[in-house]
Image 1 (cartoon, rainbow, N blue to C red):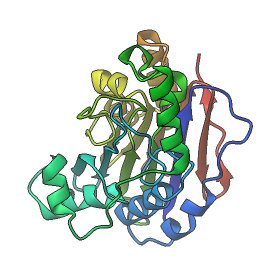
Image 2 (tube, rainbow, N blue to C red):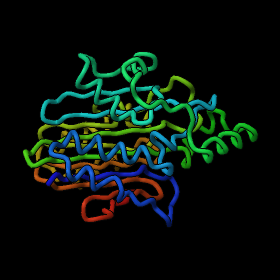
Image 3 (cartoon, rainbow, N blue to C red):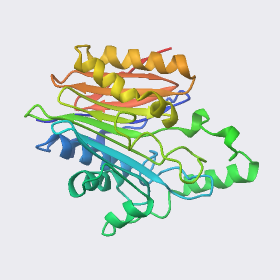
Image 4 (tube, rainbow, N blue to C red):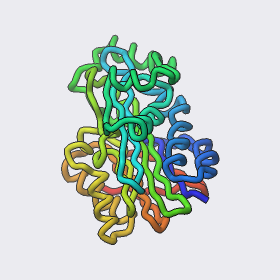
Length: 283
């Protein structure tokens, strides 16, 4: 059976009622390949209106939707990503970039052209639109408010199949109030998503921090060099903390099926086949 772990986005503040991610697991567990498992798990997370991905995504400073996603096949080293798109399941569009084009990343009109047959997404939940209207009215959409603790989260999944192949996928609506055209870490190999023959890693937090540090690649390299996933995640999260007080999280899986999960921030929901995973908080 395929091994799958998912996360629902790191929160900057403690939450007593972390969202259950259980509905994203069953179909993914039945997948025969790691890449299929990751896509299925992330698609389910994108359908959850409580999470900042797909349906439920935050809005940018102009009140629009700009979704990013990335997926990596560790068996081949190939990856695909999309940025600034508006479809219901951007993770599937990212996989299409991986499999149907010679490219690694498509943005805006290019990404939309590749997914003309996919269900479009031109609005988010009523809660997100009301959130944007309140922020617009009280003046808290300025860049000085960018990446506040309540502005950031992302979803993702890592998987290992019976053939020993690893895969990783990440999807996000970005950061609430971001400038139109901003691209985060989720679609960028090594920054917000990483997979190889030895490790699969996804991140959550302020994308700029992950882009500047290539955080997922750092954790992946440590695992490939023999460190266990938990220690690798904790070490890289501690490094991120030395650079910024922003919330950040890493979920990693190795080719033996060992998992690691560490974060800075208030709370973080992580689940696998056996249920909730207790992620380690790093100061």
